[in-house]
Structure formats: structure tokens, C-alpha cells
Figure 1 (cartoon, rainbow, N blue to C red):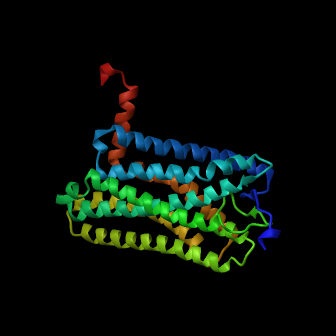
Figure 2 (cartoon, rainbow, N blue to C red):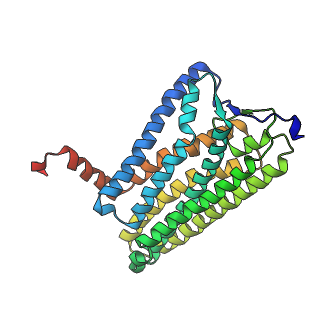
Figure 3 (cartoon, one colour):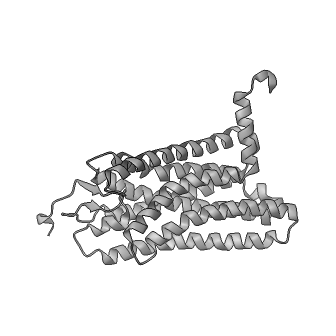
Length: 311
């Protein structure tokens, strides 16, 4: 009976720990990690934008991945960091609904973008003579916009469902952000079927993208075995970096939203992993394993630190 229900104006986030001392330590750790995430991804975008050697489809897509990773982390991490030192760990209803929308919009967009990056490597390795014809700027831009569009549709579908749920009492969320399954559980209704439906939709997006990625990289690796050793080595190094990123992003997401069992502490750990450690590891993986990125970094440092007379 909606007449007897009180509309909630805020939710309480229980966070990662109740220990004061541990919260101070976590504040310092995650503040440092967030600064590294932002600086690392900004550096990648600056290098790719300013260095003519990196003006290629693969690095255009990588710059977009770095941009998405910044949003992925910024959706939840700043609030988590503030709450470590806050007595009142609340989030407004609007803020909570925004986190639900953005987390699925950004994650959905990144999943599709990783599929686009796999398609780029497929064309580069399997159809090298037609690479720049197929992966021209117009097509790359269209594929990136497609990833954002699919992410938006994915996110808005969750938002439109969750925002209309009746919330009349319980408002404590046992996490550091408004995660969709946890918010649905607070609704004053039997939420089991709805939660199953939402997880199924999320599973369709995640599993479909994951299977496409597995098939793509399997086909690429089979093709690589038939090429020259030098080309195979470079292609294998690039694909290994991409596959590593795919695994550390997809596996936690699928475990949280597709796996039928829910283990609170494990879900928290995996949520931290894909929202903090994935955006942190991506720059490291793509720069430390990529010779062209390391050379671009040297040129960038030399350009600004070396006197003009010595350049």
C-alpha cells in the first residue's frame, strides 16, 4: 500500500570496514590508488593525442579505454574515499540512482569497447593489407559511439526499473556504493524475480561480449601461429596484454552479476577489483608491455625536460 509507505531520501553505505584505524589506512591506500588511476590514464591520453607515432586506430581505441576507465573509477571511488573519514556514510536517493545508472552504463560501454579492440587486432593481424582501409577514423569513431550507445541503453534500462521501486523502510546497503542487486533487495516487494531478471540481462551482455572476445582472440592466436616469428611475437605480445585486461575486467563482473550465489565479502572485494584495480592495471599493462608507448613516453619527457639546444 503506497499510502502507508515513506519515500526514502537517502541510503546508508556500510562500506568496507567498521574499524576506525583500518578505515584511516584504507583512506590513504585508496586515495593514492585513485590519484595513480587518474594520472596514469591522463598520461596515456596525452601521449596518444600529442605523439604522431601513436595516431593509429589501436591507440585511438586505447585512449578511449583510458577515458572510460577514468569514469569507471570516478563513479564510486571518490565517495568511498570520503566515507572512510566520515561518520555519516549516507548517499542521497538521486546520488544512489546515479551510481546504479553510471556503473552499468560505463561497464557496459567498456565491455563493448573491449570487443571493438579485439576486432581491431583481428583486422590488423588477419587482414593487414586492408587494415587502414577498414579501420579508418570514421569507422573507429562509429564503433566507439556504438559502445557508448549500447552502454547507455544498458544503464538506462536498469535505472528506469530501479528508480520506480517502492522503498519504505530499510536503507542500509552493505557495500561502498549503490550496487543494483543490493538496492533491489531494499524494495518493499518480493524482489527475487526482478533481481533474477536484472542479473539475466546483465549476464546476456557480459557473457555475449566475453564469448565474442574469446572467439576473436582464439582465432587471432591460431592465425598468428601461421605467420613469421617476428610478426607472431609482436602480435602475441599485444594480444596477451588485451587478454589480460579482458580477464581482470570480465571475471569479477560475471561473478557478481551472473553467479547465482552471493557472498558479501567476496562481492565487495570483486567490486573493488573491477572499479579500482582494473582502471589502475590497464595503464600499466598497456605501457609496460608496449614498446611504442614506452618510446612515446621517452620522447615526451625529452621534449619537456631537455633544453631546446640539445634536442
